[in-house]
Length: 228
Figure (tube, rainbow, N blue to C red):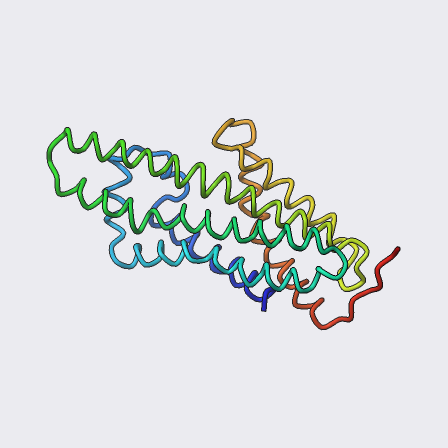
């Protein structure tokens, strides 16, 4: 079930990301000013708001994934399995909070912005918009959330080393995917990692589906003996 949850998360991520990219110019729109972004956000209507709500709930699928991964790997690497579980829970919470700001906090700001003609009020709402993006978006969702998520993938990849239930390429592939993510999360600090961030947008859902499939495959196989 944990593996299936991770595959479902990847599929939903691709679907929702594609929809928002086509209708809301996501994620480039995140760098726009409030006077452009807020009216466009409200123009998405109830359907767009529902899609944003779904987007915000996708990270919760990391919880069953973490539980299943710990059950599978705790016998061989209990420390890494427990740490990976805590990291997955952290990623689920912070990424959910970051994404859910759009159909809640930012939606309320967009409603007020489009119904209030006062320039002073617009300046205040714009400051709140920037603050929510900085705290819930850049810091919690993108930095803390992605840091925890990629460390989860790193620890689980390392925990599969020497485990006959997983192909030998599982560990190095997971390490590469995690390291790309750990580099890409600095995209808000320096443009030097912009290309890595673009690659990571494709690598992340692919690795989620691959690792989810590997978890499903490994669940039906007996654990290999631990080398002492």
